[in-house]
Length: 93
Image (cartoon, rainbow, N blue to C red; front, side, top):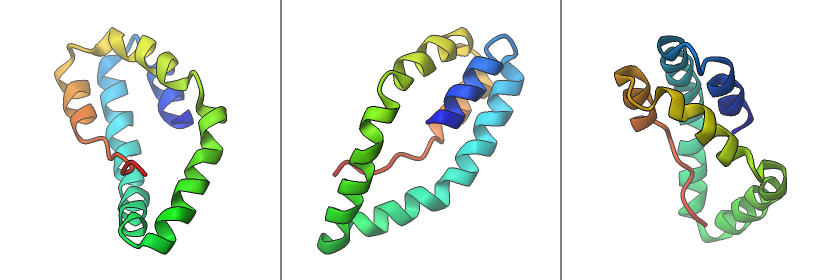
């Protein structure tokens, strides 16, 4: 989330650059999210994954609000909308 926050803040006035940077970020994230998804399917690994993800809760507090505030500047840009539709999401614990 930190890298996404940096991207949307830096590129909030340059929607094409934001779209490109988000696509690149999400491509790198995909392998990590796929691994998290595999872990979530194994009960013993799912507990470990949940514990590890919870360590980020406090550190990431407020980041989603900051991301939203900057992302809204490009909410109607087709490239940003397309990039956001491909954002990989870690499965809920």
